[in-house]
Image (cartoon, rainbow, N blue to C red; front, side, top):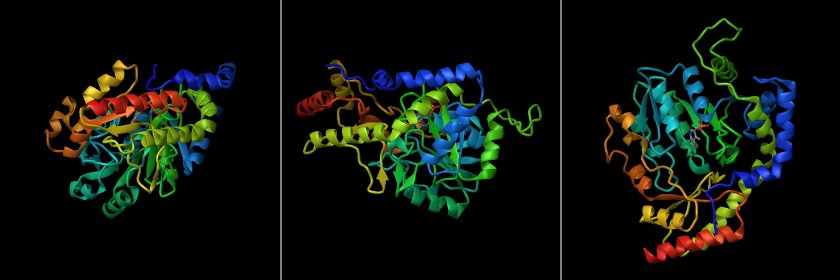
Length: 368
Ligand SMILES: *Cc1c(COP(=O)(O)O)cnc(C)c1O
């Protein structure tokens, strides 16, 4: 049997006619930049996120970049974040000229450990970027408490956690702004790159909108230097078809996760921990295992797609050598990087596929 890590074709087959019709609308209208599909998607994503405003942008990366630029964060400023995330979170901090300051993660959730944040705050700190990793939100109460005390902005990197909740509150709605990605492998994935910023702050919404189009409010008059961070209407068209399915797709991922959890109960395999405060959307189903690289190879040899998110924590990346971190500085992240293994959890998995994956995982761990 073959079980891929993700099967976008299986999902597309269920919505193909509608997607093509929506795209055809855009083509017929020849509104190739901006237009009604973008506005409709912005309103709908804001609504499902319990936020007042949504702003479509070119990617999750550009969502974070636009936020940092619009806050005027730059050289001399520090931004606190986690080293155990996708590169973009930290790449954006560096690109605006600010200094990323890493705080280690919680060993169970893989999210930033709030008990270690305060020690990292200095006079230069301007913002905290918590990342809601693998579909589960970070401990936002603790983070907001520290941010409020020190007057820091909180930008939620919710690229893996759209519609996920913390104490009933939606991802992106607790901090000053939230960033989503529509990269095809995310729970709500486009047919190319795309992203969205959500916020409840009208003044900030105006700033990020201007920044999205070269920093110009009125065309050809520029108050600030922005970029081209616009969302493509073809992406909005496809996403409008997918959005109504998001909750049922995320529920199917949760059911798949439960299915695996039951299979692994009683074994030595550490299954994903979900805090009682959170509902995860399981962008990834991540095990923690000894002999991880060998298990990865064993599963791949048995035609099972699986992946490591992330093998190298960001404080140890070559491009951040200048920051002066060394091995041992972020021990919890470094250990996780050696032990995590993500299994296929996408909604269209059949029971036979899940049984096969679980069987091979158990087979390997019995031998190892
Ligand atoms: C996917 C992702 C991003 C970047 O999103 P893109 O749309 O690929 O630019 C940023 N942060 C995290 C945590 C992500 O998973």
